[in-house]
Length: 138
Image 1 (cartoon, rainbow, N blue to C red):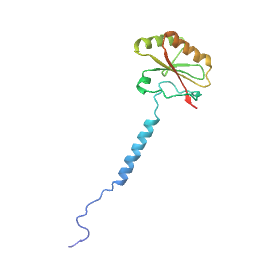
Image 2 (image 1 turned 90 degrees about the vertical axis):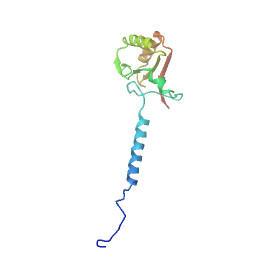
Image 3 (image 1 turned 60 degrees about the vertical axis):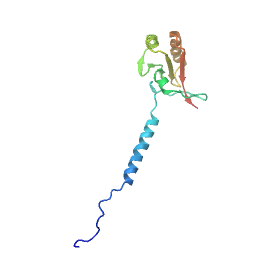
Image 4 (image 1 turned 90 degrees about the horizontal axis):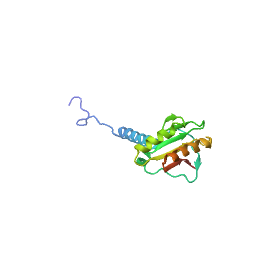
């Protein structure tokens, strides 16, 4: 046998690095999906409350309208900036189209409370009973 050496042993595929990469991708996917939050409003610095609770069923909260008030007193309907005078018309339209209207109010912790009260007042004038105020857990 000229060239003698190893016979019958073909190329070997090392699978361990492949498994490492797959686990890394899986862990990355899980971390990214857990960090995504379903906040439909604009980002504000929420005030803390020791009685803060989870919003519950995400499908129920997906149907809710988010009203946000930032530290400058600007009002946002989901992510659209609106004037406070436009709020009743938008809420009335939402109430007519939604079967069970729900509103979540996000307010910056340093926002002037009179703007938050004005938004809450408009929601109640329209007759939407299911209103929640979003806070962070202390």
